[in-house]
Image 1: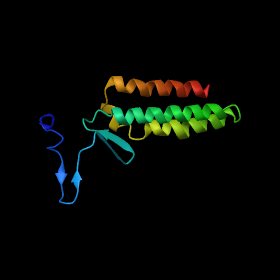
Image 2: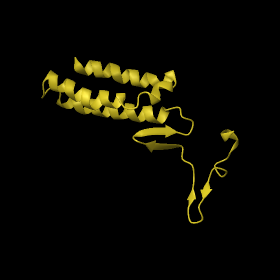
Image 3: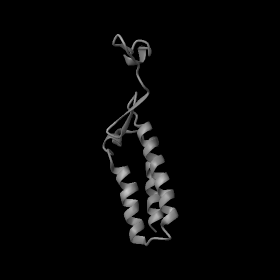
Length: 110
């Protein structure tokens, strides 16, 4: 039924403010898109994980393997684990990006 509605039909006029629908919103750090595919959330998490992996790679020669593992656990695995039950219903194609990050994490620990 929502696909029959236009953006104009979904606006809310409060008298002084007009509220329009967004394609995605963030609540408690989780990004929800308008059709609940979790693509927005997963792409943001994957992007953040790759950024953190690049930063860890820069310092891993300066710190030991134990510190590197702690950094990976703190910055990468915690991001992947946060609200992962919400992403469980995501499409397989979308979840491939998360699997690639996990492989990069294990490669970084070696």
